[in-house]
Length: 113
Image 1 (cartoon, rainbow, N blue to C red):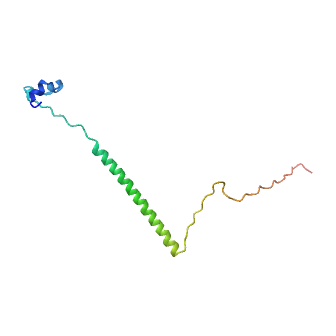
Image 2: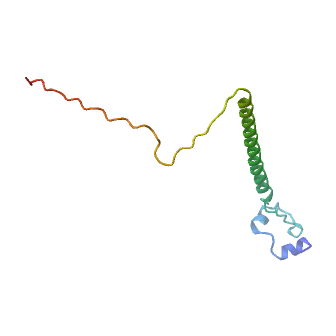
Image 3: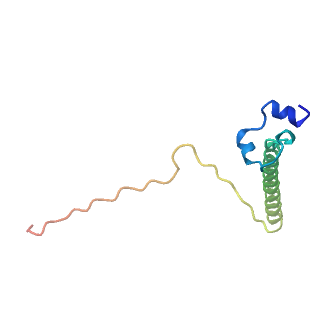
């Protein structure tokens, strides 16, 4: 359809649009332009890039903090003799010394002579 009258003959002008046109408009010269549907590719890609960038920044930040902490501990242990030791928790009960049960005190009744 190249001409507006071909569009009109094919019935491409809806009745509600034809009613909205001002009086005296030649419907054969009316061309309806439709807006293209929205493309969601751009916002989706932008969201993925922002998410990946944030994760990458957090990963780099974690690695930098770990490296700074390791170097600080190495410097402190070399200069001041400060060291840390890691204790592994045992799989079973904790090895704490058991307390002996308290002795029962015998009480005497007041009426005993």
